[in-house]
Image 1 (tube, rainbow, N blue to C red):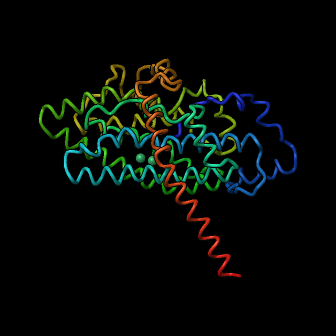
Image 2 (tube, protein in one colour):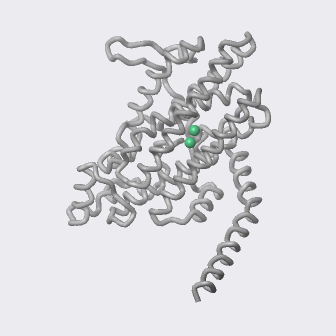
Length: 335
Ligand SMILES: [Fe+2]
Ligand SMILES: [Fe+2]
């Protein structure tokens, strides 16, 4: 997962700066390629603001994938059966893979992985705020698959047609794997909802905690979303935050009904006129609090990430030493 359409970079907030190159021949060629549904590749000319927007979005997405491993990884040793454990290990491993494809895609825009890691570890770079909530019960693992990965799929399917080639291609594979993640989550929820009264209560309690943060994952309302207009023109973002959120709610309510779970929203109601569900107000203050570092697990997640990075230094050193040796051997053989 998990791009989140939030705007935390003051550098690209100025709409005038975003279109500085309009009218130049290379800018016209670039926009004509985008308009014709062509792909922009790493060696092509691109506006600086396009490169920066993509770099921020893709790296934020990559960070979300690897931070997203923590809440679920927390349950690998406590999965209720060997089968669930094997599935969860595979799922968490997929998320590491998503991080790798996305860091590679981001590197093609001119920033090294070390720089991206430094930005994450210092707290300068953001990741999806959904991972700053704790996984208190086994039902939360089901909820992450069903709702968080489900929301990610909604968000990411349009990204498979993103104008930037490396990102679009990475998203195709990611989406296939996310669809497996969503199914495994729903399958956990199905087992719990068919289980004992305690298991069903555990599933309901988990839904009560996750529902609203998941709706916030789609990012601020369109009216407050600074980047959307420009990102749409560049065909980075094709569907707005509010449209994606509505699509997600419309798809998820019948699934909750099938599970026999109650969505914690008194205002949730089918609207025959619009053909969509109406829903209650989202607590954006809570969302921004979590984005800005005050969520229940922000500090814990970052500390775990930094520790893992530091403890893995010997692996990176060994890989580099091997690469140097191999190169020297090849030179010797060639001489
Ligand atoms: Fe993922
Ligand atoms: Fe996933």
